[in-house]
Image (tube, helix red, strand yellow):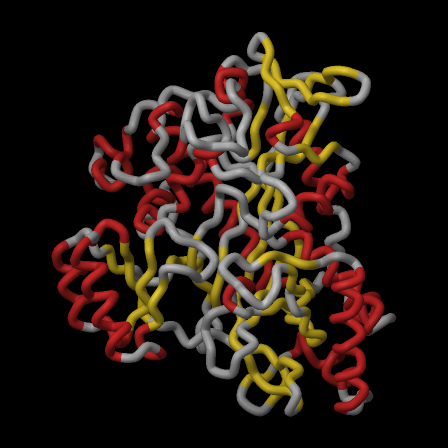
Length: 460
């Protein structure tokens, strides 16, 4: 909100409004928003947590505000990035030109756990692999944006973004119109239109595939299905006959044309991928290959989620688009590279070390916050399996004022915008701002105790 001592222009009107509230009134509003989230069912499950299953993703009432000028950089940068990543995924499952030309090491891609051999030669509907993307963006103390990682398998969080906006509208009525905040309420229509675009039928049947009620993002699965007016199904609700997919309904079998799947790639079909999967639908991959059902995101996209592949995205952009990246990566050390490995082992106390296939804040070491025993543990893990780890410098993430029990204080944040790829690439003019609620913490993941903020993108 502040640049040294002066309030940034985008925040000035909100700051004036905020000053009308006492600390007690703000805490009352905050308590009301927490109760609203619980009553709306805006909860998620934290695995391995003995305190209880359901938690709310705490919404801090003070929004993050981004000017239109700043947002245009994010928007164009993400469009560029998704275009290149889509071309990359298509290439590595077909001609593999980028591997033959040595731009990305062949072994790095082919050794990825998410490079799926059954997808070699696959041609997804309309040539689109990554239909829904939630790339995480951070900002350093100089104000520069960086992409921290890409989420292309089953990016979550957009339902919280949409519901956060409704709650904040009630907390600060009238401010949205005066400030010129871009609306986000059209996301469900955007998502449905994108999914329908994947089918050649004039009125295709769309469904959301969920692992079930015990999944951490089940609220989101049910919310999006409801908002789009489509069926929410589990693997048990679907059956494949003659390479077509059907829902089992009280009126008999109904063919499904497009599935927004919230199940990880390898659990989709026990016949094609993981034979132990109890969540998927036997034969659905064969139906997909035959062009009788569309899946979003396409199986095989997870290879671009690999944090080692992420390190090569700037080169991927240059290779396919002949452009420099509009938003740069965070500098990244690949532990599979001998020089990088030596540097990481020697400087682990100053670095953030991540598993290449982990998510949700798990499998990660924040060097400056860890003790010597944790440093030693991760040195051992990295030495045993260098391909499974990357490292990055500890960025001084930007902060946004946040309501705490002791008053308003700065907390570190990141940004997750949502990108849809249908007839063309669209970026929702808003994002899920995730906030590290613990003082000094850099971990914003909800599974690690993080919260969220509404993100206001201005028209100007």
